[in-house]
Amino acid sequence: MAIQGDVREHRRILQQLGVDAPEVRTPADLEGVDGLVIPGGESTTIGLLMDEAGLVSVLRTRITGGFPVYGTCAGLILLARDVEGPEPRRIGLMDITAARNAFGRQIASFEARVPIPVLGAEPFPAVFIRAPRVTRVGPGVRPLAYWQGEVVMAEEGSMLVSSFHPELTADLRVHEYFLRKVTAYVERETMQAKG
Image 1 (spheres, rainbow, N blue to C red):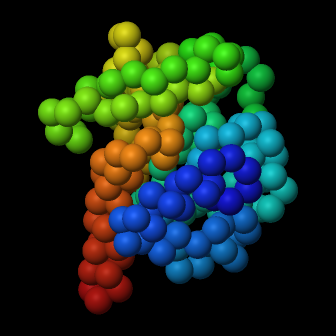
Image 2 (cartoon, rainbow, N blue to C red):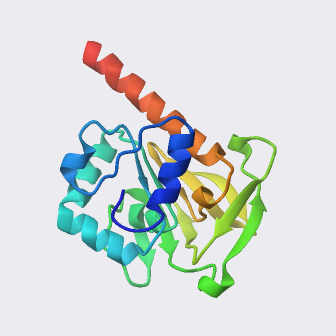
């Protein structure tokens, strides 16, 4: 999603992994796209511009059909079903509640080595910048990582979210994990088309 936020950083990592990463700003840009990263940035601005472009309703339909999407920081807020405090326009499909800027203001940004078992034994160098907290997790949501007792990475169906910014590190494992979701989706779609 190339509306606002850490677009260039996510594209750099995806390109390092050999993935074509076209910029999505309109529903037409989604044609031929097999997965979407919603980057960190300002959730109110991204949500408003997504809604004005007609992306919110299109993405709701596609995600419900299994389209993979990964939201980092602001992207987590935009995917959350519920938001504490001011609620931006959003997709709102993941059964979580998000609290905006809950880890502190910009000046309180920090990096932590977070254990993420699905990525292997080595902790992940997670960068938290005005990060949201996941304050409620629905029964269909699988927490993937915790920091100080708080869920900071989770998945539900084709949706993946993290409170932190993996695109600001040299560690490719979170993006690789998301790409496995994309590959599984493409394989399912291909089988259904043949079927």
